[in-house]
Image 1 (cartoon, rainbow, N blue to C red):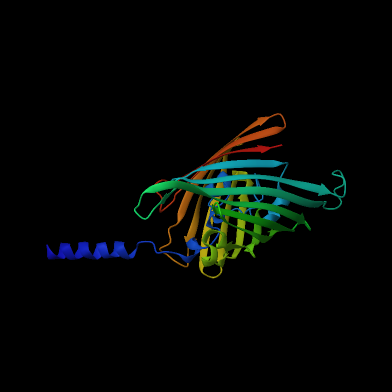
Image 2 (cartoon, rainbow, N blue to C red; image 1 turned 180 degrees about the vertical axis):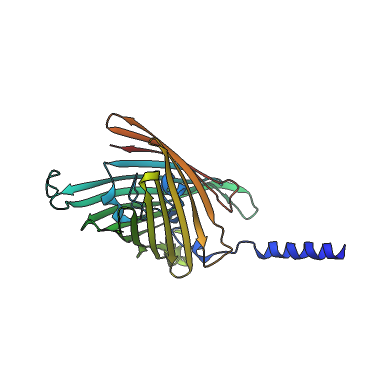
Length: 330
């Protein structure tokens, strides 16, 4: 009996020791902008910085804009717990310039343009007085608007730049904004292998002035965004209708994450996806996020309409994340 008790105590102590610890990156400014973009991205573990096929989002790498075939419009809505919202919308287009299409003697100059919006917020936040009585409700709204420009300098190399504008409305009299930048490159190692390098949120920070709220007791505060340094690789197997991707991302040397994803076309109209995100090799107790999703495409003349869905685990939430989206290629 004593041995059984000792074993139970030992196992219980292991469980307590293994509980996830707080990670510094979770409490830094702009966390909503690090959750991913849309159904496809989140469904593939957000490992899309080196993926050049399908509907592309320069949220992951500004250089991707030059690889978008036709015009792409995509939007998604997230179903979240705790009265939170997270929405996405983007448009991407590439421009081929210079020589005529029939002249294949030289590679044509290709530029890309993309714009997008991420909106996040929390509603039904209760305000209570000193006695605990509710007297009002407020909501927050945090937004990222980005514009990406890219150029393909050769058949091997593309480089892009993203301008990120943040606006955070905390309460009626308190808000902050910021302008940051992303720089990204994509190297076409071969027809199957692509390599990416991205720096994100350069110069991004919220500047708060609480003077309007607290008067003489207010103060100015800067909340810096963590600088993201990311390298990625994708490997495509067109004979199997399969694309795989892997990324390593570091934030100010405080956290290093590994993410991976795959996309498989069962038939031309149906794609299945799966991925893992937030595998923190700097903190083994940080919870990993796994995800999966699918898209179904329907061609209508020159317009291709797609319906997207993704599911992602949220470790600290009462419910997991569901993302429903629609996309158009024209």
